[in-house]
Length: 403
Image 1: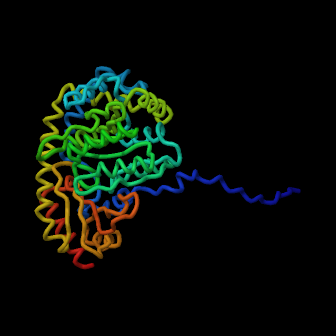
Image 2: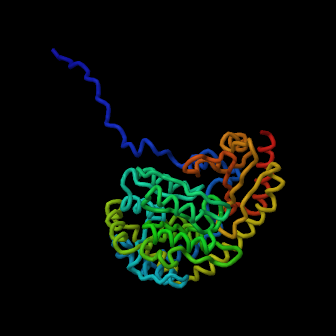
Image 3: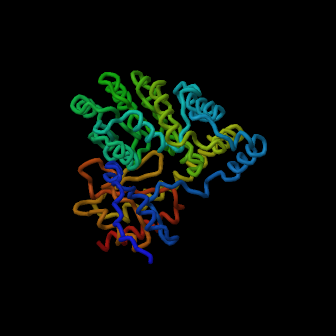
């Protein structure tokens, strides 16, 4: 006779960590998932134009690396990054006005990983981080996952206000300031040189880390280059400069880097060992080979020329597409325009009816650390051709008029 044991209810699994429960996903990624249909003209994603990738040059670099040094390309590498790539990056950084040696750099799996490493190395739960307002979404996610308290620095159409920054540093005692001073995501604005010098002065005088994120700086369409904050006196020993190949070579390579003072750089290397050991060797060697065999600056100039035409196409069509009383930025480079509709428009509430017109944008509210401006939205102008931009703006205008 078989005796059946009574079923024992399964105990619940332990809960997720509080930091994972408290931080949401990226609204941009959520919107892209909804608007992936090919008929949608998508101004929402920050995606480079794939037809402008130098696919042939990148493929040739991979072929050369795999043919000539396959054992090395397919093997483990050092946490800090392949020496050939770090040497090339150091040379490029120095040529742009910031003396840099290979040992000053760590290669990261995209500059987004650099943010995560810095959060691990610098932040304790409850520490205060200062950010621009509005701010890059994924930075808000990284700092939120670290348990940081995020406080926005007041500013204007030119960027953050150094006097307000000084007051906040005295009052809040933050660990770091995070900024995208050149062609900022989401606004497209560029912090003027005088303000950069003032920010460096605040950091030196008050004791503050600066994380200067520069993924878009090479995509300039007009005007003169503004030196990095990291190059200003007083910032040398307290600024982390982040860079990336995502916008100038290809995002699928997942190659970024950070330049940091020695002690912080060592802490980031330890954090990276725990995260992924090292960035893929073959990608690093292929990027180094590409830099040796091709003129990346010439490629970037070609890309910037096309993107500049696309920016101009979007600027030319905004007045007809947007309601009277709207305002928008006019960036000198980068990938984004920032729009503010008149009251009482709510761009989050409006998005579904706009998407029904087969066009999409990103509502501005999630880019704010606090007190979101619900009348704002971000438009990416680089992924579509000028003709597609004109049609997308026509659809956007129709969607807004039907509100």
